[in-house]
Length: 241
Ligand SMILES: [Zn+2]
Image (tube, rainbow, N blue to C red; front, top):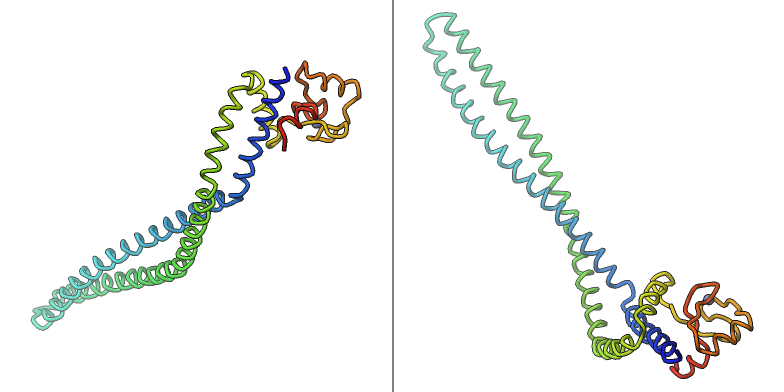
């Protein structure tokens, strides 16, 4: 039974070390993820604007070639005005000239609206681009920082994980699954010891009778207040740290 308690306490201690390594990385992994999302969003917005500009340019070019056609027709009608034989022919020609004029005007207006929109889009692209560059630089910096930290602790982490595997093999299966449950619920510490009659996890003062039972080390106890596994100070002393 004593061995069972020691194994659990050792597991907690080694996981504390891994938690510390993780804490060294701080919020860097989250920052990197957030930056990547922001960059993707801006990239996507820029691409959509660029596509809209390209489509607008194509529309305008189509309108321009149509306008040229109407202008040519108009010129042709105007030259025919000199050779009309009667009023009816004259009226028909002037009507065609006016219609062509209308079509030209319509396309001019549409083209100018498209051009205005293109200018706005271009301004938006120019406004977004510098912040995109800034974010990309920031991401590069944070990624490098994270890489350095991970690399510097890589060996240490490997060694800890090897030791941890040996300790874990000594922990009872049932204890292990409970350990993970408590660890998840309590944000890290699942096994605690008694210090000055109190649970070191929640500072609940343990009744003297229960303290005695815990010190006997013939049963696995959980703190009545916080639910963490509780071991006597003797176990903590054997394991050390
Ligand atoms: Zn407690």
